[in-house]
Image 1 (tube, rainbow, N blue to C red):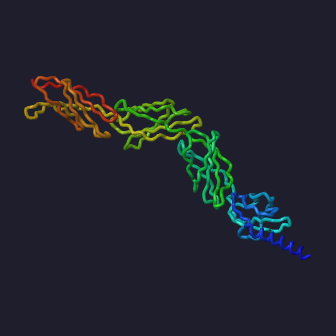
Image 2: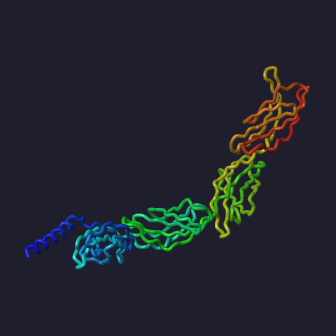
Image 3: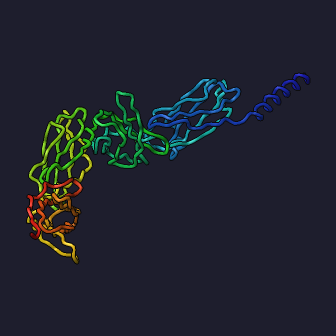
Length: 374
């Protein structure tokens, strides 16, 4: 009998020593949504089942949900929770008699509820959307998911509405959904909405072939069915627009030597005006010099021909004037006169004056015939 007591005592002592040497169960949050939290825990020797219960942190003794798992499970989910609520979760390791061998608790906030679909998506330019949505109470930020059928997938974090979604491809259709985020995680994506970026801007080039016209050209824009070209004169409120299906356009009837700003955009088959190009500045060529007069001037014993003309004060930028004589003389000026020299008596000079700016030269003035002293 005494030996039996000692045997029972030794078995009890061994069991107690093993239990004492075993660490307590540990639990952590793996992920959380608005209705479900996934937990993981360490295994506990002797446990037959693990019981997970969830209670609001405000009422920790009133569980609202529980779930049971087998002895080989160390990760599981508990559902039927409410959105944006702080819960305390308790994992209990139970033996075959449902006695608690060990337990541990952790707490977390559930994610926000699923959001309403995005209200509006409008192209800002050919590579950017402006997105508007209804804010979610309790959300600290938002994730906008952008994807398309070509395999594109991206998630952008934004802080408020409206938000810009950048670096997209021109004239491409996308699906956009939104998720609310708090400290626990993100909500499920909203129902997606479809939107399409607009056409990119034409790459325009300009030139002035005469003092009253500007030519605009550009390479074709894929999918474009029409182009709009706008022009306005600096220091003027007048702005003109022209539509064309060609890839070039000539603006006639402009003012000589004046600065114009030009912009263009392309229209898609859906009837949407695309992204406008950057403004390109173009000056028309200067007017032909007028009222050209010639006289003889002396510099000591050296004779010369002073050529003068009328200045046009309503021009943009610097105008350079070039005067030539068929006697192989020339001079340049940025004012209203210059001197051809040297000249001798009895010479016959046919003189032309031309004005030039960045756009190019004007037409030469009418020839002036001048005969020096006989």
